[in-house]
Image (cartoon, rainbow, N blue to C red; front, side, top):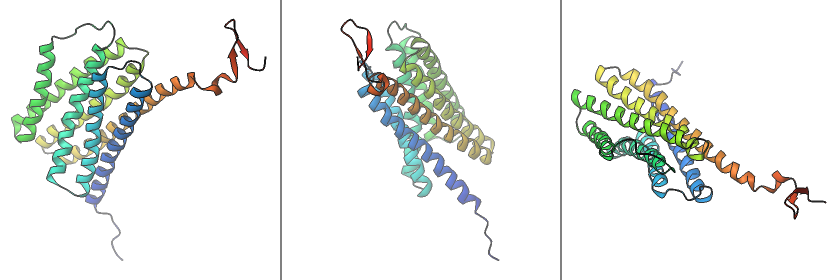
Length: 256
């Protein structure tokens, strides 16, 4: 009787493809809802904030598509695209969260500008160090840079939510920040697991973390859609059940 068992390598490949696909679809849906939200719902949107946010989410879309394609047809340039997208995903989202905080009315300066610049430069430098070099010291630099950038983004995220509590911005940032944390966790586990020689653990953490990233992108898209839905219901004639305003401003049934 023929062996009907499934090759474990095929299972892993399929799982990686689906994980990339979840991120790609989640980023695509979120980007579409974000464009509609800024165009139709947001009042006097801060162009810089939403542009940075859109670029970050777009990088997530590139990561998902390039990663899925590279899983099915391995290629050096596709792998480079997927790896590079993680840099722009974290970088632009972190900058967007910072800008969303400072675009709020009454926002105060938290850190000197040179500190913010140093954090961004350290993160970009650490990414390039890990991309170009493959040795123990490079791994440590990557971990430090990613953790620093994530903590920086989380700090501004907490401030943005607190400063804009009850608004669409707070709902968006609150749902999006876990995706940043999940990406950092995946990179952290990848670097340390590879250095320690535990590839199976790295694969397991990568699969779980990547699916979580896609999930959080979906929940952010749902949050944005709900914000837009609340505004739409304000102008929905079915909500008012045929009522109208009288000349004196009081609300009366339409049949009176």
